[in-house]
Amino acid sequence: MSSDSLAIFRRTGHEDLQKLAEEHFKHDLEDKDRETLYKAAGKLSRHAAIGSIVGLGLGLYAAYRLRNARLAYFQAFRAAEKPKAVQFADGRTEPIPDLEPLLRPSRWGDIATYTLFGISGLFLGGETGLLTGSASARRTVRKDPESKARIEKAFRKFRAEVLRKQADALEGTSSLKEKIFG
Image (cartoon, rainbow, N blue to C red; front, side):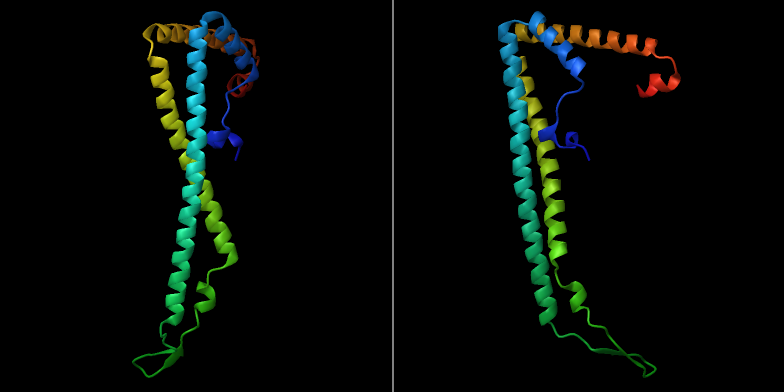
């Protein structure tokens, strides 16, 4: 599992593409557009971080509740009167094994519960934060129609240049394996 699996740690792609994006960022946009993009990126990052933290907290809370419920069920099972043997119609009697040691909550079970619920909450919260952050960032960019048009034009130019570089790289490779797997 890489760090890109979690929204809070996710970063952008390759360094050469980042340099190309910075060039377009500097030359194709005005200062106001750059500020808008910085604000939108900050909102996206903030939402992902807050979502991850809230998700982690809710996951750990759910694990705590589950652990307490398991413990309560075990206490009720232990306190209940249990049969010691089963008598069949033919008169044969078979003893029933004691299941109490198998049902007792363990430290390893608690560790697994907290770990799985914590990671699940972190993932779900981070992805939810990423979705809400992208919606908030989209609204930030769309506030000013002129700025939005300049940002979209700069992005189209950037995307066209990226596609040209990828096409050049594909034409320069010698084998099918290199074309497919880079």
